[in-house]
Amino acid sequence: MEKSESTASARTSSGGRQLLKKAIQFLASMQLATFLLLALFVLTWFATLEQTVNGLKPMMDKYFNWKELFFFPEIGKPWQADGALVPIKIWFPMPSGFWLCALFTLNLTLGGLIRMRKSPQKLGILLTHFSIVFLMLGAGVTKFTEKRGALRIYEGEVSDAAQDYHEEVIEISELTDGQVSQVHVVDWQFLKDLRGGGERLFRLSALPFDLKVSNLLENAQVSPAQFIPPTAGERVLDGYYLKELSRQKETEAHHAGAEVTVLNKEGQAEKVLLLASRSLKPATITLAGKSYLLQMRKKLWPLPFKIQLDDFRVERDPGTNRAAAYESDITRLEGVETEEVLIQMNEPMRHRGWTFFQANWGPQDQENPTEYYSVFEVVRNPADHWPLYSLILSMIGLIGHFLYKLVQFLRKPRKPVTA
Picture 1 (cartoon, rainbow, N blue to C red):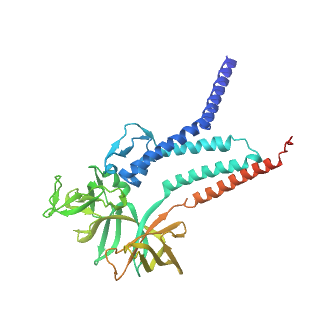
Picture 2 (cartoon, rainbow, N blue to C red; picture 1 turned 180 degrees about the horizontal axis):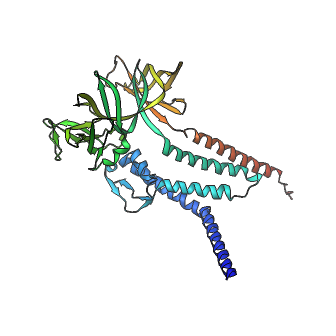
Picture 3 (tube, one colour; picture 1 turned 30 degrees about the vertical axis):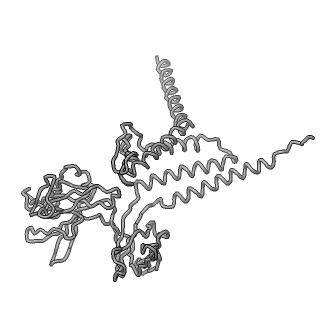
């Protein structure tokens, strides 16, 4: 009886090993690699078409969403002049680009590194395969850790914070003797899922009131009902309402808005506010003898150093008077250390993992303004240089392999030529 059980256990173990071996063979196979490359080619083609409809960031969020396995592409109608603005949904599920890339990385790791025959002659190929895996890993690090924002600064000013392109927050500022003494923030991660009619109660233990946020609109402004009457049954408060604006392809131009109800600790509504990050002034409330400022704004994240704009220069095209080139002289302030840096259109400043690109400037509606401001795109990406390292490794691997093949060819004995 014991021998029979031992034999059955051995067979089960052997069957499990065979199944695992076949799974690894499939994951490392050239057939799977070919399918994945073709699928990524088709996905890239659809992504390029959809970018003209929805813009870059929404397309990237949709096509490379790690939380979903499949999605349905949308493209513009190519037979219409405004085809890019008229989307057609293709009712054929496409696999998520994130998981295609992850599977391709696993395929190349198993087939091109682990299972590949190791020898000095294969060193160049192994190094090239490793460089591709390294590049794919860098793309994954970028997706989950990269931060992008903007820093707008006037000549002579100093700033140590960048403004996020997409995330918005609700700021609650406590006032003491007319000055801001403390700031509380409701983060975007708790607001973003309220789009489409949701609402959420935020209990603020450090404050004498709570907030209920509802009717969050991704792109909106507070409009006067007297001059711009509501057309979709919007709620009017004190003569104003929250007007939803058309969606922009470049979602950096979006400014969110929401209805915010201020509740006392007994749950009774004290005031209903319309907040929008396009508004120039925050709303003011007074509770328990203390004043507070409430506003919706783009999220700020601190920089590990300060930036001072010393001078901005723009060179205009003499024929059209348009800007042909522009650059900024800045001083980077870091403790007691200072460094002067020139940032140009294609020559960013890189420091401690942060990159500052010359992105824009203003005011552009004045020919000779009294003072300029400069706009820098601020990027924090731990894998910023990984593509460069990958290219260098790939170049070394390919050149080494080609040189080996060349030497092998030159050493090959020649057959005598007979007349």
